[in-house]
Amino acid sequence: MTAAPRVSLVVAVYRRPDFLERIFVALEGQSFADFEVAIADDGSGPEIADLVARWQGRFREPIVHAWQEDRGFRKTIVVNRAVALSRGATLVFLDGDCVPHHRFLERHVARTRPGQALSGRRVMLDEEITRRLTLDDIRSRRLERPSFWWRHAAPRERRNGLFAPWLYGWRGGFNDRYEILGCNFSLSRQDFLRVNGYDERIVRRGMEDTNLKTRLVNAGVAVRCLAQEAIVYHCDHGKAEADHDREAVERWGGTHETWTPFGVVKGEPPAA
Image (tube, rainbow, N blue to C red):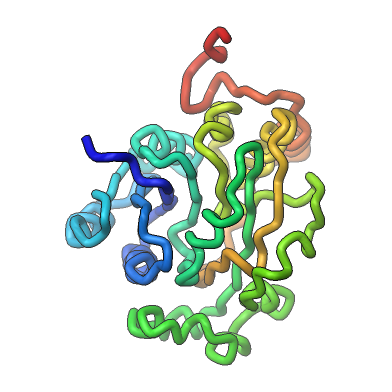
């Protein structure tokens, strides 16, 4: 077996092969190349598998494709499975509706530290620019010019698209109140496995990232802001609401756990 790549990029997808192809094109142009792609497929039809097959061999490492049957939103389960199939020491997470900036992986790698999770933010594109966005817009990096998307981005999200790595630590400060955004975060594999990954009991949309962040902080892992540095462009596809009642929000968000027995490993943590 060849040496493991430094980074495993875990991309959570559900249908929309057009969005995934945009991501693949963006990954071809990344300034950091020592990565593998692990697709966490939450029940798509054959269109995603067909796209993966067409792109197989175009990156330095083979594309990993973890798939599960479509039984509603079960991202936690398939992402854990994709992580288990991947090999990189650093895990970077991306959603299948978000196109990464060409320095996205570079900036996550540059800031990665043991005992630290990094969370970027996204530029929310509107329906019009999402519809007319071409692969050439991505290859040419036209998408990365604020003049290209400024009028088509949610006003409060526009600053997220300004590449300014010298502002590291300015937003969110150096405290643990900054939240993980599941479409754009990273941490070491060791830290992800320290808390046993996502809690697979959370199978409806929402709370999976908050719960993971809370358990990481409980385990002593700091959360740092990587906004305006690790940038992604979110393609519009309508709004999906979170689906948890108040009791579930308090349970998953206010947990005192570190390890979940319903994660990558099923059961209690191994003896020290």
